[in-house]
Image 1: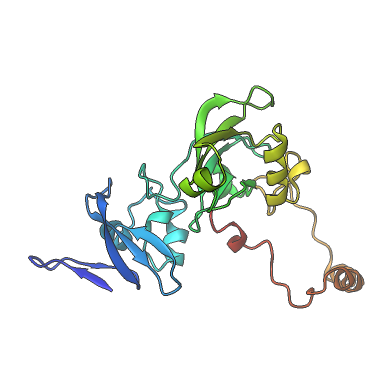
Image 2: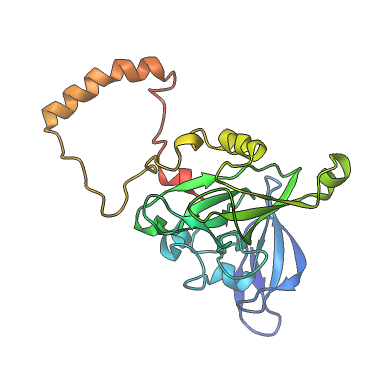
Length: 256
């Protein structure tokens, strides 16, 4: 789809779907924001100018992100200070225990949230997924308060509850939570969202970290022998071993 100006030759691309104008302007270029509903009934927003011409510096890893999207940028890829920008820095939550970079609150294109390391471009994939229930939760936000019960200067996060949750479930407008696990109820939810939560602080993140020493490569014959000897064990412990793909691919961290 294209958006064509009536008075000049400017033509801007739009994604496929149904369109509805929002009553807001993009803070980067001043174009009106459009809500798109896809064939799968998923809704997201785009700014026609930024969608067609992604502004440098406004997305994480602009070259790879734009290439994967056909050199387009929906709002969920943008990092501008805008309510529709899905990858804007939500504020520092803590320092990364792996590489010491800042870990910030991030929002994925599907609407869920996680705390991710800003050193992702250098190879660090450290991330902590936050409990998310769209029927109960409206948003996460970083507060200005440090948790008084946990080390490492963890910033408290504020969960805003939906109107439905407030009216039907009696939940308050918002609550402050800590990712350190000092609140039993929220800790249980963190454990459900992160299977390795109890060891998350010290466990290496998936993937190599820039500058980390690499293990010496084995000789080809040794690698073949190791693979053949490990295969029965892997197959016995993974029913889908033969069909499984690379679970540690970049797609696992699409949101970052």
